[in-house]
Amino acid sequence: MSDLEKVRLSDYHYELPDEKIAKFPLPQRDTSKLLHFEDDKVSHRQFSEISSLIPQNSLLVFNNTKVIPARLIFLKDTGARIEIFLLKPILPSVEINQVMEARGEVVWETMIGNLKKWKDDEILRGNIKIGEEDVLIEACLSDREKRKVTFNWSSNHPFVSVVEATGEVPLPPYLNRKATDEDKPRYQTVYSKKEGAVAAPTAGLHFTPEILVQLKQRNISQEFLTLHVSAGTFQPIKEEQVNNHPMHSEQLIISKETIINLLGEYKNIIAVGTTSMRTLESLYWYGVKILNGHTDFFIPKLYPYQHATLPNRKDSFNAILNHMENSNLMEIVGSTEIFILPGYNFQVCNGLVTNFHQPASTLILLVAAFTRGKWREIYDAALKNQYRFLSYGDSSLLWHKKNR
Image: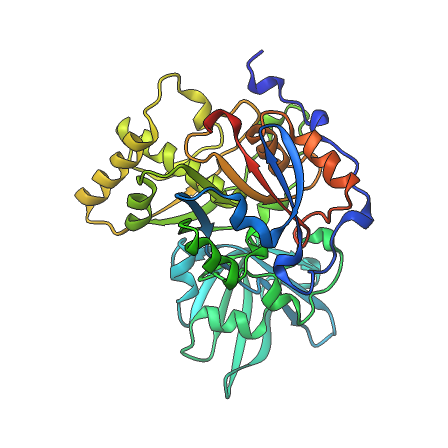
């Protein structure tokens, strides 16, 4: 039996009482608790103290994706409510940033609530207001089986404006409540920039402009990349042998400038969130692919476990830079379904800022891998000390002992 086959779902369960789940955000972002895990020891702090816990000459890497109001509601003349949840774009491009700027018509793969009430030849219509302009938006099923929906609208506004005018904030299903006006700004990081996520990179929700300034003042650098978080992040694992889980794919964008910065001489590289971690580790494996003669930027879920001899981080990132130079690229767009399981060898980061995740989830497996099996000790301490869990919950700063 391989090491991957030994990772069993039942070993990553824990009891999460409903009252521990944070259903709403705190009044102030940085007043959340912060569990600090270093040298196998747990201590309890406030998030507002985070800049004092990170050594100078470190690099924090943030995911600047922006959550779109991806839940679109149409009401039929009969009163039936059809809910369309945007998953991933099909046309005019599979690149989310391009589709958000498209005008006139787009096609998305979706999830559809009350699909049985929507006939194949039926056009759903809604009236919205963009600024002072009244706009008609139409939706029709272009492929029922694959849940593909074509959207048209009667203005020259980009699709992102249409979505922002009509969509609802796509709160995680485990919150089990409707979005409020408060959720629109709070389910978004203060540094969000590139529209396309259907779930927030929640580790970043604790940061404030003041904390970002404090970090700069302490000579702690900041870098930004993009991974558009997909609904697949909430997909439960159903396989006891977890490597059989069908991992979701997510789109990522990294600039040449970011890769150059990652080659700097930093004491620590700290990922803000599991999405930043997945992006940075995927970036390393893209360099490995290039060194092996493959320039397609797609990282299959178990690709990292198929290599015995590996380049160091700098060789991998330099290979990407050389490819970008030769191809005259200022940024690269790719996708990843990387599955970080216990036993994974981290190539880029030795620090992680992250919230507390659902039992037996892909994110718990990532935390278990990063903390070298100490995840249960960390989570027991959080439960005992009344930490708030999941998207609107408290935070942690975790260090990977091997690389420090």
